[in-house]
Image (tube, rainbow, N blue to C red; front, side, top):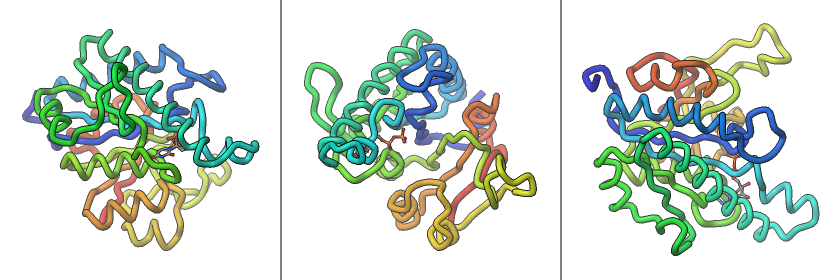
Length: 239
Ligand code: UDP
């Protein structure tokens, strides 16, 4: 019910790798279906959801460049990869009867619509999930930055960054059993300690515009829903 929700509009960032499931590459439709259901729960309680999906399950510019490709060309490939992921996610959402639209920062007439901030806000207000693809449209950026940028642009109240671990830890919890989770971190600490939560460009942008970021574990059942009703999952990064 809408009475329980804490946020009216959020921007959820999923990495491309989260779409692979147990495969080493590509998209696992079963994972998409599961995510679609979780996103549907948010829509069901009246939360407006903007979505940014990475492309790391397919291509990353930096990795392609290491293998010998031109970096900018590699980044273009990475951005196109995010469009493929967005199409797959839209398909999964629509199969679960959740209306959604894909917008691309790079015009791709006939496939998806070009990013338009005002139209995106209208679609969100109509209860559609809006998937912002092709990152920022520029090389040398990441989809973390795209998520923060779009979140700020469409006036989301929170950026939710889905990761493998349930928040930010004092050390790698897999390697160090004494590692503890931060419930809260300031932008300054994340920047000064270069905590690898999100790229620093993204954090700077959020700091500049007072956009809180919550880092949480996507495959923890119920975590996403718990956050939008005000639960204390993962780590909150704010001023
Ligand atoms: N990318 C880019 N500009 C952007 C967003 C993404 O050039 O604004 C490229 C970049 O090469 C990046 C790739 O797209 O490596 C995939 O995005 P990202 O690495 O952020 O995906 P994730 O790690 O979230 O799956």
